[in-house]
Image (cartoon, rainbow, N blue to C red; front, side, top):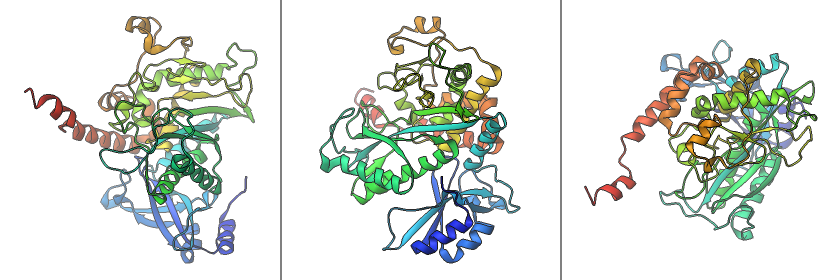
Length: 443
């Protein structure tokens, strides 16, 4: 990996005649924010950061404490693969600082760094590989129209979504984001891009960048891409299945060649931690009212707290594509959707797994049959619980969770819960089209 420092950035900008630099960061909900500076301001920004009004960013600070500093991370410097009026534009992700240069506790990137440091103090490096599912539509109207009628792994006509996917992957590669694979997903006009695993902070940055690139390429081609978890009734929603592994001293500690499942004790109790704390962290991995329209039985989305080697109906799966290989041994957590804030989602997933390791939780046996086909009595007998059914239940679980509070920190935790309560209250007071069509003619 190329080590990028301030000197590298200044040299590259001059060599490539870059005219503008976009400084990126996110609010607590994972919306990408940007401050653009010219090359004349670059050296100063790299040394001192760039000031902005933090009170205008959701979850950051109050209006009477509004001065914030966006400090560019030179290691994230990349030239964007599209131009502004024939002029090159670059980007860098930023850490958000207080005026005294201390880290701002409302910065999601800082939250993830804090959790990664906790893991590092245990001797661990956390690696992540998400699968980003999304839809292409002809428009962004309330009745979206898809581009194709394809299904899982279908090869759609090259003049429709295939070219969009190719262009997206080439753009990601230009940004040095490695793509493992891409394919058509199960629903019409639904697609997936799998990012090659890397350490979690880089992957969170890559996830934010990838979502922007997918949307930007779509706009440039006159269509609309969405990461909304469930945009269309009656078909599969979009998930962000997240593959995780932990390394220590350069070795994957999840792998044990002598175990029946090729899983180490650490892997099993990491899984146990995820299962036990899944209801608590779901508010973070699935943060929208719409997220719970996806988390329903029958659409390949996980609902029940179980794990298995192959079964895709379970919350946690251990992929067996390359069974028995150290590098390929990982845990796939299937609940998250691609509309989450990846910095916070990776934080709570790591915290749940590490809690399992620290407390040495017991792991229930893997499920060898379809969990959806089991009766409630059978699931109860097997000790299989379930995820929250809606945003309100998810809020209740998270609000009582010491683990989520510790992972996010008081500042982000309180602001996040506050925002989600407002969203739920706004949603539950709406009169929907379903209600009007169902009840108006008969009541």
